[in-house]
Image 1 (cartoon, helix red, strand yellow):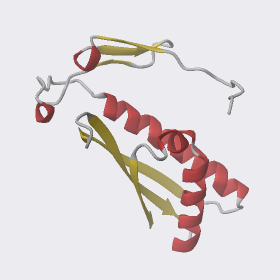
Image 2 (cartoon, rainbow, N blue to C red):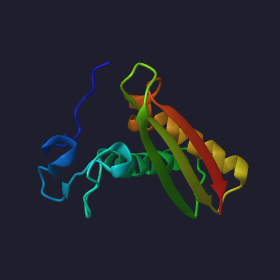
Image 3 (cartoon, one colour):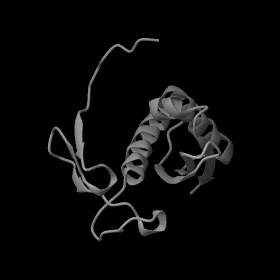
Image 4 (cartoon, rainbow, N blue to C red):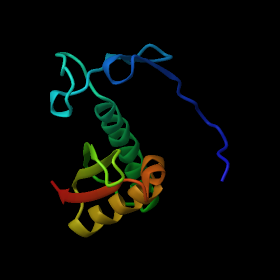
Length: 143
């Protein structure tokens, strides 16, 4: 299914997981390092692709939930999305990702909170992109 472009983000990475990544607008400029837990140097003041993905996914899913909440005429008083993105060895001998999404919704019943989160998750482009490829666990709670 072709996508009608609305906006396109550009970034550059040099040096792979022990390098540097920047966005074309200059707002993101980060040093990267493989964590010690993965056999890397775990350099201080660096991040990982998984942290960047988690931040992007949190923002995208939060926006999708907000969009669906407005569509369903359910207005939460607060919304917090906290993804945990895990990288690990996959069965095929390579690496794979797993995502656990903790979503806290304020001002709605548990039923309505789950309704808007599930609708947002089905609508979110990041969720759609990884569906069937990444294990995703969705946890919804109210505040």
